[in-house]
Image (cartoon, rainbow, N blue to C red; front, side):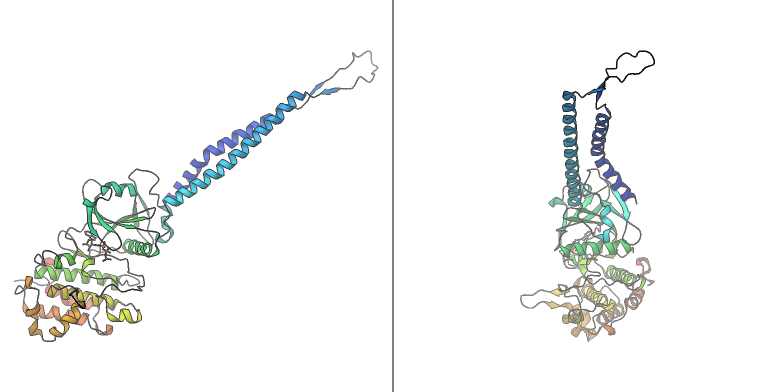
Amino acid sequence: MFVKHQTRMCLLRHLLLPICLVGFCFFSVVFVSATPQEIPISQASPRTGGAQSPGPPVVKVVIRQDLNKKILIALIVSSTLLCITVMMILYLLLWRYRSMNNNSFNGIKGKSDSVKSSGSTKPVVHKVDSVTKGTIPVYEYQLLESGTNKFSDGNVLSRGGRGCLYSACLDGKSSVTVKRLDGGGETDIEKQFENEVDWLAKIKHQNIISLLGFSVYRQTRCIVYEMMQNGSLENRLHGPSQGSGLTWQLRMKIAVDIARGLEYLHEHCHPPVVHRDLKSSNILLDSDFNAKISDFGYATVLMTQNKNLNRPSEYLLDGKVTDKNDVYSFGVILLELLLGKRSVEKPSTEPESVVTWAVPKLSDRANLPNILDPAIKGTMDLKHLYQVAAVAVLCVQPEPSYRPLITDVLHSLIPLLPLELGGSLRIL
Ligand SMILES: Nc1ncnc2c1ncn2[C@@H]1O[C@H](COP(=O)(O)OP(=O)(O)OP(=O)(O)O)[C@@H](O)[C@H]1O
């Protein structure tokens, strides 16, 4: 409503000048037409007595010079009117073209007609109705531009396949993360952008990344998220620190956090949501190592290509997507946490999935301590280790129906996590 009102006001403002000019011309015409057209000159003879003799005829004298002047005025007025009408049409067309160009986005299911992000340089944040419920702040592009030092290289957190991620300071205090996607007209990027914003606008959970807002400017789409200071789980496990900062307990906390986020998607969202792109690079860690699931770009989009080898084979075969797909991906992450190996190792020849590498070895649990991530060797109760490994193997079963529900996974992990980290394990 607010945005519609604003649009109407803006239209009125733009039309005011032409309306005034037309009004002025209209009154000029009325005024000219209201002046006498003829000047009658009567030459009546003096009346004598009661007898009335027919007087001489009234002579109407039309002054020729005056007539010419009126024709001239009429011509000027009509040509001015014509000019103004043409100008008004051109002006309206130009205004419409400019507003379409500045805000060509028709996504978020039509809601972003309301996105008025480029008209002014004022750093204003509007709140508009989200797709379904709640509100999503719409940031002015200029605010994001200044918050990221004009999207400078110094602010780049990561360069992804679909765009760059920047750190930004929007209110002068806390920092946020801005994902900038260029090529918004391309349907693939547009769809992912819409998916991401649509889903995150609806989903609010402690273990799912928070959407702070978005912006649409020409072909550029930006999504603003909360800052996750400890980056991705992938980077923590396989980056320079090689998992040394992640203790056994912290790894269990991360596993439980992910399972909680997934349980929310599968069991508490109506209809259930399948993430479809769960992997360690999409698990983000905040300053307290709380894990949150991110990247909902594929949450409902049917994939034609499968870049993610974390995904189970049936995904490729018949394209059916069930919540068990996410359970498989969760199992892969659990194996990464236990073994410290990447989901897909890329040696010189064939890439090998951690599943095909680890599952045969895990058939004999006595092998487990030998293949465990060296960073956590000897730091946990062996019974707990076997239990977690058994859960991981169940999750990556080739047959989806043999995999457990994420809620069962969660409830088998909670007793292994200390009370102070959100589990139910009491350490005496
Ligand atoms: N909110 C955030 N706070 C801090 N770092 C983040 C945040 N979001 C993403 N990152 C970092 O940026 C990396 C890339 O994230 P992004 O979502 O841009 O990936 P992507 O471009 O979708 O790549 P891919 O398609 O391979 O998943 C993450 O792995 C993480 O390290």
